[in-house]
Length: 130
Image 1 (tube, rainbow, N blue to C red):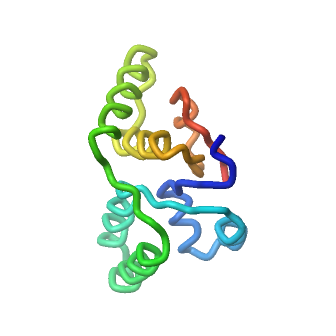
Image 2 (tube, rainbow, N blue to C red; image 1 turned 135 degrees about the horizontal axis):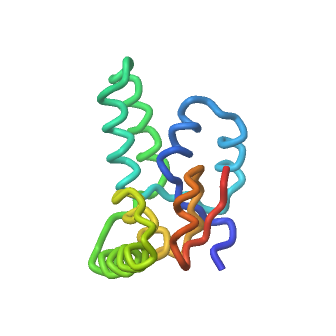
């Protein structure tokens, strides 16, 4: 059971950085919070196209210094391949980066916090909507 250990999806981190208090409260009361490396890449991409590049980049650096980053290894690639195969067989593709994020969450036995409903298509992924 994943319990109170969470991997944060990009939309959750974005909401948190924009000051959504309920998100901050949930993060503060979590046993453990982790950031998939794919999420960090998506955040830097978004920061690069924002009107406040320097501020947003600094905000990302602050959270990466505070919370552990989860990277990809060979085990992640095996889970990724299984997820993508399953989605293709069902005819329910989802964004590529989200498959990687899900694989990292599954590999590390974490509940993925997200607002994206397409993650429901992934078998074996523990989800919670914040």
